[in-house]
Image (cartoon, rainbow, N blue to C red; front, side, top):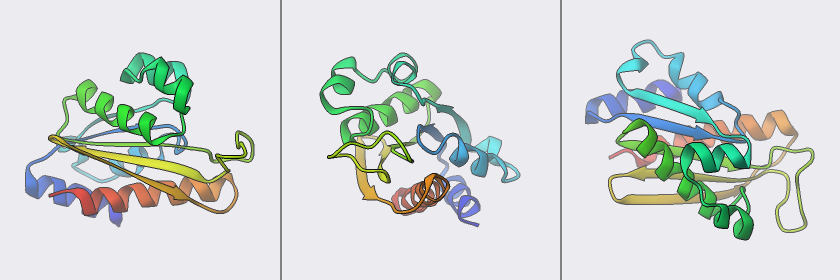
Amino acid sequence: MLETEVLDKLRKSGLTIAVAESCTGGRICDKLTNVPGSSDIFRGGVVTYSNDSKMNLLGVSHVTIREHGSVSSQCAMEMVGGVVRLFNADVGLAVTGIAGPGGATETKPVGLVFIALSYKEERIFFKMELEGDRESVKKQATNEALQLTFDFIP
């Protein structure tokens, strides 16, 4: 299973991870914590579904939310920085997006997801447009986030 591979790779590298989730609603944390021994590597996670929780828990700027929205690369990058600080983790993962069926705009369709990763001074983000219903988008975003994390870990 991908979550086991992620944790094994982190363990071999001597790294810890923390996760900030929005549109995935805690699915990534659930998958990671279902792996026996994950407590050695998984520092913690937060589901920051509201803008207030993104700002208050992770330090996402109200200016970022106002100017770019909570579903943006800028927000994802601030989320990942915040979760690393919050849990003092080596690797950070953050996901924000629109699972649908509501919440879409002309420029931000259902299925738009941003995934951000952080390790040391490196921070990167990925933008994707996933297809399907709410359940499908959440599942795909969870799997994509885990795969990108696996690929990102040194």
